[in-house]
Image (cartoon, rainbow, N blue to C red; front, top):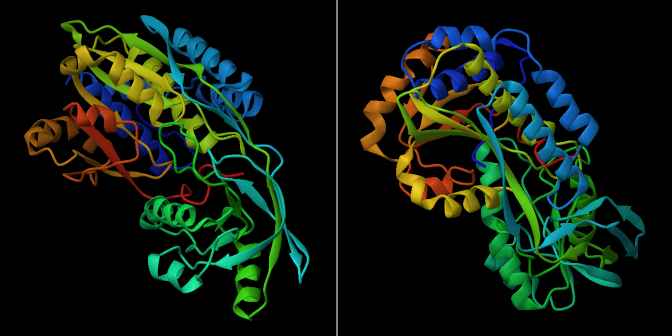
Length: 422
């Protein structure tokens, strides 16, 4: 429902990441006993076997699929085994079901070659189209569309920068809506975005945050294939393509949040919320985004429970579906309880070492947050608080309700080229 918790403990920095999150989460509920919780966290556990079950046996987990139903059952069983005081499954509705069919694209004239392509998430179906004229619209900026001229009935190809830093990730999401708007206005048939990942790597890019179907068919094409197309178009050749995007789109369906609770000893009606989304796109097995963190949330509960300490406030550990839809539904359903939530803790950027926590621009929580950092600094003295405001994670709807949020700042590690990917 809320956030990604990272545990890929293959080196010292990853262990620091785990302990930083766990100790901060616990210290939000009780200022004592941090060493006991840390000691339990370092003991052998079922975390790795839980993760392998989720990723290797269940695999990619798109809401509305049998795999997602199995993942919910996995979460319930894991929380119960970890010692949760209670575990509940909260149903909510998603407006559309979506699944990719056998997307196919090829350049047909005057050259002829296959293009590696996958549909963008939530893109509409496109029945097989033949001999579509291909038009290069650069990076999709207004002046580049103007230079391209008539795009009606065309397949647009859009340049991208190779992803190396966080700014590249956000640019991909920020630039797409304008490109889509101009494509629809100009009457284009479809858009082919160049992959931001090297070595033919494809991934599931999404422009929709609420499960709505996009207005124009879209594919992501292998970076190297796109470069070949751009070179041919730049040489003056007129290229044509065949494209088929047989996505399967259905109506409303029920999905679920999995919520486990450890009751507080002094203020049980106040809450700290820790969580990780359980769903994933299906091109891979969803280990990095977000299986490792879902497994970590379960192990965080285990470590706190096994320490024998009683948190002063209750702690909710959650698994969420379909990006921010699940957290949005949780906030809507529990709006009357928002004033009882002391904090929401979010770690949402893969396996990189945590360098700090952002307080969302709220100066009123700085002093309290600084006190909570004591146990964390015992693990990593370099961790710092910042006042930055983050977006695109599952804390956002809580933030809008005035709930204090802490979002982890992390090193990139291997996240950028791998999330949502094959």
